Length: 77
Image (cartoon, rainbow, N blue to C red; front, side):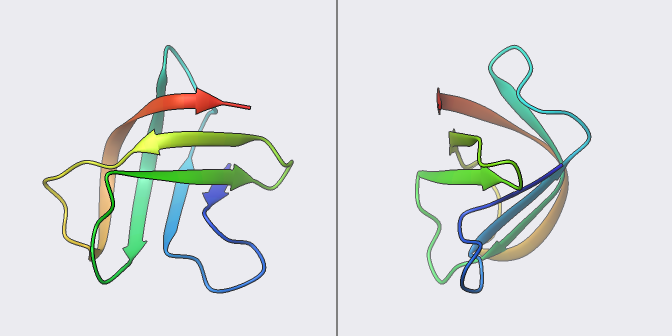
């Protein structure tokens, strides 16, 4: 499943996960960040329109690709 902070324009945050939200976590197989500065949280939407707000880890670089990162879900809509 692919989650993005933007579908119309170039995304700043892209998450690829094998599953959706499980036990309050979105387990990212790949977390790609294309941001100048890392925000504390991001709202992501999947291709089916489901939305989640996740906390971004502080130990990743703002412009990077990371693997196997569990993201804590704050809100699911």
